[in-house]
Amino acid sequence: MLEVRDLRVSYGAVQALAGISLEVREGEIVALIGANGAGKSSLIHAVAGLAPAAGGKVAFRGEEVLGLPSHRIFRRGIALCPEGRMVLGGLTVEENLKLAAPGRRSFTDLYELFPRLGERASSRGASLSGGEAQMLAIARALAQEPELLLLDEPSLGLAPNAVQAIFALLPELRDRGLTILLVEQNLVQALRAADRAYLLESGRIARQGPAEALLGDERIVERYLGLEEEA
Amino acid sequence: MLDDHLIGVLSNMGMISFIALSAYLVLVVGEISFGQQAFFAVSAYASGIASAMWGWPFLGAVLWGAAVAGLAGLLLAIPTLRIRGLYFAIATLAFAEMVRLALEIFTYQVEQDGELVGPNGSEGFRDIRYIYEADISAGEFLLVILALLAATLAIILWIERTRLGAILRMVGEDPVLARLQGVNVNLAKIATVAAAGLVAGIGGALYAHLNTYVEPKIFNVMLGVHGLAYGLIGGLGTAFGPLLGVALDIGVLESTRAFSGYRMIVFGGLVAVLLIVRPRGLLDEAAVYRVRRFLLRKDAGD
Image 1: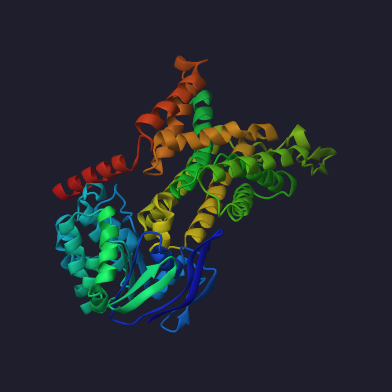
Image 2: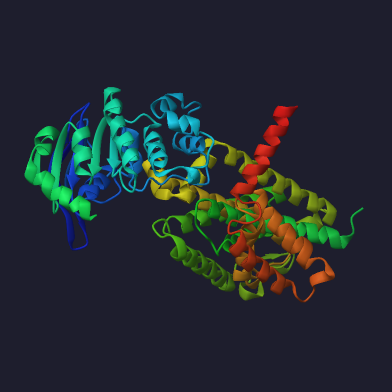
């Protein structure tokens, strides 16, 4: 579904991605893991059109999307749920969703997926907990029914039980036909939710394979759990 | 019926409201402009030329002036697309000063009945006499101003209730998020700045015809600063906000004697205080939300 070939991203003289190739197949959850600064966010920003690429190709359903403006990439069916959630605090939950999909009248399907949002539909964005705000950010990204969801650091700053709830949701979304590319520092959670994973180190792919295999690799888990505890 | 003083004050409020609405539109998409007076000026000249020199009818001249001002807005919007915040504000200020200085040297005169008519550089542009020749009274002209203002306001209020209005608010709130939700942010900004130019242009055309005389120094930065301040005082939650700002400043501070001599001090103080205690003005989004909910509840109760 999504094919990234030799993607390079630089910020001035700093190279964030040194030629990355990866693939996301339809109906998969693919995790992109790695330490802070490994290039995970640069990759999905480049795919979503937010960061200019220095070279490479990004094909979505066989068509090149690299270089298109963000709004056109979105209309092709790729939605990015940004890190930091960006919920509009002055608006209610439902208004946030309406802004994301102004043509829609009802959000019952989204409230079915996220019952908590249904309960808080008329609460203001600013009053949501971190976990609820993350759910709203995901629901908002899904409001126009994309085919591929790019999910940037959903666990950032969330309490452990909220993280659990978010990750438990991902297989459910996949089973409803959504394909997900997940960027995450929380290695264990990401690998548990994902089908396959790529491990990024300094702008290159260091490891790739089925999520279970990476989860079973003690060296990876120890090294990154160590990092995680520091953070 | 109304005395001349009151007609004059109301006409002034009406015309300045167009600049206030113009600056407000730019504020809605998240930018601050100190240059909306440029569009007011461009249209004052363009419409004056159309009616006084080309013999166009008044309404045609107003529409022409507004269209030229809209085009000028487009001219400003395209090169400033990639700059934001303070840099955008400075660019609008520079643009408006360029327009004003260009008008200082703009000369285009033709002979009519043995007299030269038309803009004459820093001397200004005299004898835009359409409303005297057509024998339109000040009271009738006030009705024209109010009708055009009401139509403009109605269109803006209507757009604010549509999907487009929601999109423009989202662009102003968070352009990156808007992009991620499929909004063509560049197009939204260009269209809004051009539309803002057009709205200011309607006011400029009215101004030139009511006063029969315009000169470049009228359109200095203070006019733009006032236009901007009206939205910031009155509120950015609804298009009624900038009109409230106009009413407070011109209607109360300038026109009553209570503050004579102190008007600018009171006005400046009002802006400063409001920016601290109510950064999005009196009729901000929260106030509009409460009013709307109150009205809805009343509807439901009936």
